[in-house]
Image (cartoon, rainbow, N blue to C red; front, top):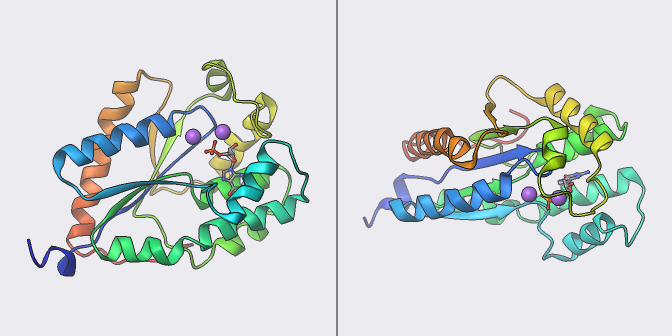
Length: 213
Ligand code: DGP
Ligand code: NA
Ligand code: NA
């Protein structure tokens, strides 16, 4: 128990998907599950609205401020960069992080506006690469039906359709895809297996890499 932190690291696990795909519910259910198993884990989310940069993002999303598309893209990225070193410390000291959205949201949402995909990826370079990316796959129409959107800037069906397309462009063969239109328990079950498997692999000393790798 004493050497637990020196010989094992936590896993960096990212949930991605459209708005209302169920990421937030699944990540909090995952936390209770991991706590029950005694796995050291924290739930993180991006954007992290608690920081100064996060407050600018929050105001933009609430349509209380307008920013150039490139500018807001860089702020979202900066919001991930300001958490990078804490993220690395947590992982290296054995804490698994369940992260609700990450750089893939950054690229999918901004490229859906028409920004060049390589330009969008560039500022994410050097952030930590997730050990597992799970995409909660839901048709945009179905997501829109779920209790309605909250009224933030991107929560519109036509835009979410574009985002879905850009996630497909971005996606690589390592991503795990779960049908998120299924009932909550049917999404949760495969997700649990994927997460536990990943936690196990990282514990054995899987190398921590940077994006985009
Ligand atoms: P959420 O707090 O998960 O509901 O995210 C807020 C909104 O911001 C949501 O519509 C997704 C979008 N979003 C999240 N991360 C990024 C990002 O890095 N860049 C852009 N352009 N949008 C993002
Ligand atoms: Na949202
Ligand atoms: Na969410």
